[in-house]
Structure formats: structure tokens, C-alpha cells
Image 1 (tube, rainbow, N blue to C red):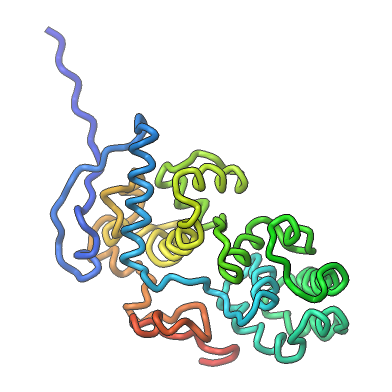
Image 2 (image 1 turned 135 degrees about the horizontal axis):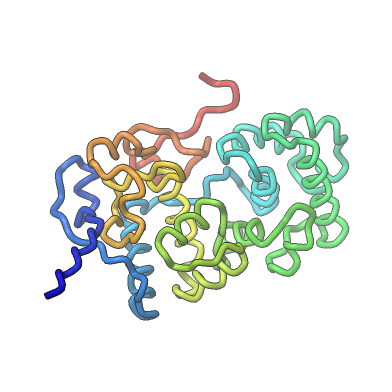
Length: 292
């Protein structure tokens, strides 16, 4: 008789993650890789992940400081290849000197470059924000348009930036496919696509349109705080039972807890002026530029 093949070892994940965040050892359950997952099962798993993350981050919000659509579109353009924190530390000086599109459109580029220097790529970013301000003045009467097809015509504004503005300044649903979002939806096997536009379409098809903006916040917050690029905190992850990539990072609960960048652990957020709900949950505002 032939010897039966050895059973393949399957990753084991904690059953419920909220216990892990409090430091108690949770029960164990098997995570089945969803290689043969049906479309219906994928939709259910994806939506459950979003619900779980909404419980962990009920105060998730855009992490760029802004008071109006103009400030948000400029800040989002400036956030390319730098952190939201650095943008938030830089824009107070920019908007104090150039509060409207008309002001920024007429600005001396050298003066704007000096303000934007901390953001990196300051010459290119200066060209973009002055260019988009001129376009707003000349083509849209100094107002930020509320349509995708108009926003993407502005210098420096692509679909990602446009959806940030539409979702958070106009309340129109959109999916923000940044680097965190791309990484996590592939880890979760929601899609195997690598092109941002195709990722947007594939993930958007799993959720009602009304969920898209909050979904983006939940995924991005999880990527920044728990599911890091190089060493995800698998052993302290609230959605570990639903994740086919469980085990790529640290699975020991105590070691994983040390990897968390979590506001309830005293870490400041990205915004200098965060929403009150975030402060009420124990989050701290970020320090201004040059502070400690």
C-alpha cells in the first residue's frame, strides 16, 4: 500500500483580534487560503474585514489637515512621495500666505518653493500647485470642481487625488488606491491586479458604492498602524482569521504588539488638527514643524 501524503501545514491565526490588542491570549482557529474561494465568499469576507476594521478604527478619517476643497486638493498633491504629517506641518504657512486659488496662482514660485522645501520634490510640487491654482481660476471660476472628469484635468491631479477630494470634500464616494491600499488588498486576495485603476475597479465591485470612502480610510489606517509593508503585526491583527497572508509577519502576540503604531498606545496621528472623535478615542495631534 502507498503511504498517505503528509498533511500540508496550515497557518494558524488568533480567533478574535480585539483581545490581542488588550494583551490577552485568544483562542486559535485555522485560516484556509482562499485560492478556490467563490465570488460570493470573497464578497462576504471582504465586507466582514471592512466591518471589523470599522470597529477598530471608528474614528478613521483623511489624515491631511484641510478646511475647504482647495486646501485638500493642494495638500493631496503635496503628499506624493512624503508623509501626510510632513504636509500638515508645511501647509499652515502656505495657506496663511496664499489662502485662495487666486493668491497661489499669482505667487512668486521661488517663495512657494521655499515654503514647500520640507515636502521634498519642492520644485515640481510648486509647479503643480501653482498650475492647478491657475487652472481653477481660469477654467472653474476659482472653485474646485466636484466632478472626477474635471478634477483630473488639473495639473498634478490623478484619479487617486481626485477621489480623495470627491470623497472627503464633497461627500461623493470614491476609492483611494494609495500604496497601503494596494498592498493590503493583494495580501487579502481581494484582487491580483497591480494597476491602480484595475484595483479600484476590482475592489469597488465587492462593496456598495456608499462604502467606498470609509473603506479607503479603514484599509489605509490598518496599513499604517498594523499591517506594515516589511513586518506586519500578524499576532496583534484584528482581522487575522480572515487574512490568507497571516504568518508573513510576527505571529507572537507580545512581539507583535511592539510593532503596532497605534494611537491608543500614545502615538500621535498625522494631523495637527484631528477630528474630535479621534481625540476622544485617545489619539494625539501631531506636533507642528520644528517642534520636539
